[in-house]
Amino acid sequence: MFTNNKTSYNMINISNKSISYRRACVSGSINVGKEVFFLIKNKKIEKGDPLVLAEIAGITAAKNTSNIILLCHQINIENVFLNIQMDEKAYSINIYCIVIAHSKTGVEMEAMCGVYAGLLTIYDLTKKFNPFIKINDIKLLFKDGGENGLILGSINNIPLHLQKFFFDEKTFFDNIKIVIITISDRASKGNYEDQSGQIIIDFFKLKKAIIIKKIIIPDDEFIIKNVCINIENKYNPSIIITTGGTGIDKKDLTNKVLSKICNKAIPGMSEFLRLSGSNNTITSWLSSSFVGIYKKSLIICLPGNPSAVFESLNCIQDLILKIINTYK
Figure 1 (cartoon, rainbow, N blue to C red):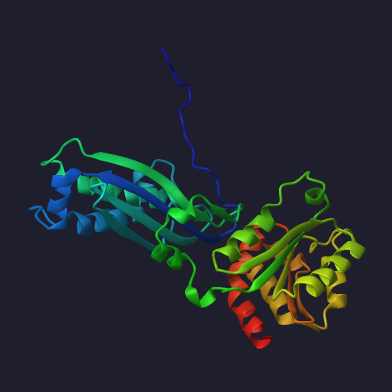
Figure 2 (figure 1 turned 30 degrees about the vertical axis):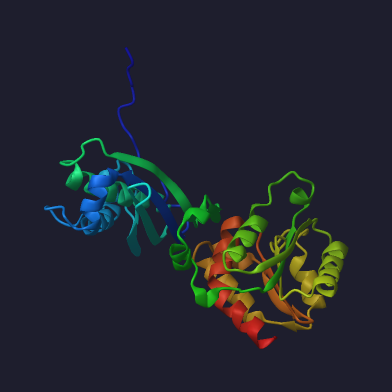
């Protein structure tokens, strides 16, 4: 007979974590069959409109997740909504729940609860007609924020109008050419996965930018300088983004090298990056992040930490577009 000698359970301590911008999208579906589908579509369910009630139930459940799921942290949700789509070919109803918060922990559980509650509400209102209705495919589609920065599941499965919700069209980088350079000895040797470079790619691809090239180079003064010069001469990108080499280690040379080749520095953006980062970690003030213009390319030097990269891009995206439009 199985026995569990543990007598107490504890929440994970997140007191030492930094607050970051968190978002999640979860989807799920319920196959109701032809008869029930058209009863819902034609608003013939006597208890009420299942779609409207599912939306209200989902929002309520997401807001109360910590009361439903044991040991789940209470989160001050800033936005939650359900998008419900009817699929007449499959006689199913698809629910998407999006949750947004500034938090020390992720919001995917809140989105999960929202979808489950919405689907169960539809089941409860229609089980009279078909008790064998099937709930299917509840899954996380998208999540970002936190230590891992941007995480993409299967974002292409999210309806286009919901993708637009995640990325404001005002901050789309339509057809703007971007080169990404990861500066790291370990990553260049293949000893370290380049998460930060991938975060930058994902961030700008979803904003309709053109990623011309992404390379990894070591922390070497000669290589950093010549790679940036050659990239500008060969590709003429609007933006060159580097990640890594902005710390206080003697090998961190990015700021030193690129500040020399730029014909114009933008110190306000550098300070803004440090100020914004300090909201999450005090060590941001030790970063030598640099922003400047080399010929007609905007050079942005970001830290190597994946979370810091994602937070930085979110806070300066409007300023980047302003500079690009000025230097067209």
